[in-house]
Image 1 (cartoon, helix red, strand yellow):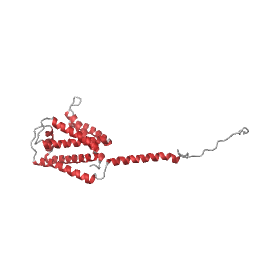
Image 2 (cartoon, rainbow, N blue to C red):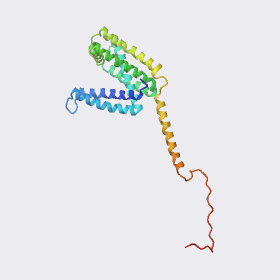
Image 3 (cartoon, rainbow, N blue to C red):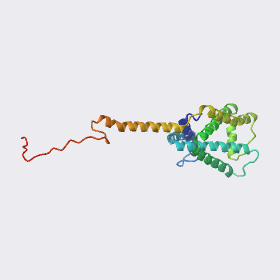
Image 4 (cartoon, helix red, strand yellow):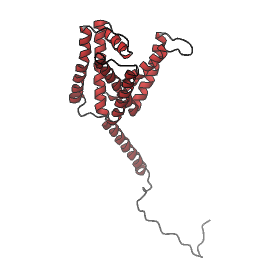
Length: 241
């Protein structure tokens, strides 16, 4: 959850970069050749690792990616809920909904990072649990149903196990939000970690600036030292050989 902030940023970049690159490599022709599944997966994993490192090191990029992931999941849930009642009239409705809500959540994540990070991790974690259960129960029938709904293909109604698994998604998300907000994320803030590191660096810098003054026998700047009187010479003085 939110307590593992760096890990969340890394996983967000890894997942987002891997999925996008895999779809581009596997569905499109690269250099006039059709890449195999294994090659596309390897390229996607490598670029996903690079994206994960970028999102982990750059906090704003990681929050933006986390918000994008949350928006895509919320838009998918909204389209699934509205599909039986109001089927989309065209392909631009799902695309616009996905992009619009993803950008909105990404901007909100930059404004309220803790709340949106908790919400994103809860929704995404619940989605992962639902997909795993669907894999063991119906061999990813629910995932195929969601994919067909998003691309506006004719779909068959879900069986009761698939409907039960899909209905568990919002319940698990709500449970994860309450668990993080009351237990794991209570009193934890990633901004405090950044401030404490900056304070430690400032303290080390001050110690290093004071260290030469202690080691050097010469007086530190700002201290007063009496100058010796100047030597006076007279006409009768004889210099020693």
